[in-house]
Length: 293
Image (cartoon, rainbow, N blue to C red; front, side):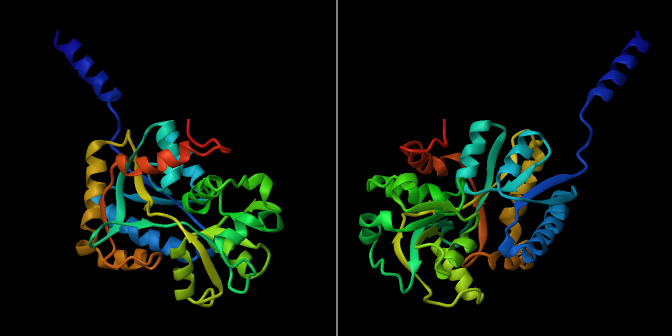
């Protein structure tokens, strides 16, 4: 009997999950920020490794899609995603929101905008919509919230079929690229974030006043940090607390992350799935594109 019990315990021990040795954190790199982004995330990884007690391995990806698929395959544990990508990921299953960046007065939001070059003959949004057959238009990426879905929904609400009505419509692949194509005269109008305009003006990558904003959207919830649902609860809790503690525990990490936004008093708040319900409705109501089931 004793030998049988020892054999059972040995079998259970062999079947028990091994202790987690690393956490894989995926972030989306951009051509415009390919040098400074890794430095910021290395600082973040070092802080999280110490706070959680498990080494955090940082992995850059080309866009949000690989992070979603990596989470589904169990190869990515944590990722920062755009709000629309997060919603798509929840449909596929196996992810949940962890935290969302914010300011002293609460979770951060941002906006979408439609822009033209400062000397463009397009003076108003009505000009663009009325004479759209004359103009070219750039969105950012099919999975971009502020660079595609929100401005597309707005244009559709005004009777614009973006694939058919513009002289040409294309995707630029990045917010900075959209700005550069407008400024360079390669496209007549584009969608981007007002925050990106301010950031690029602030760091000298474009000159103030080179673009004009024709339209700004209502507020959109900021990009969340998400985790695999299968990640052990104690690891998820430690990661969440590390983000919440960051302003006091690691101000140097906060300073490194803050340069990518215009947010004062950079910090994190607990994220909930309900924060993204408004965006879900907008996406489902799109007439000419199928994003959500």
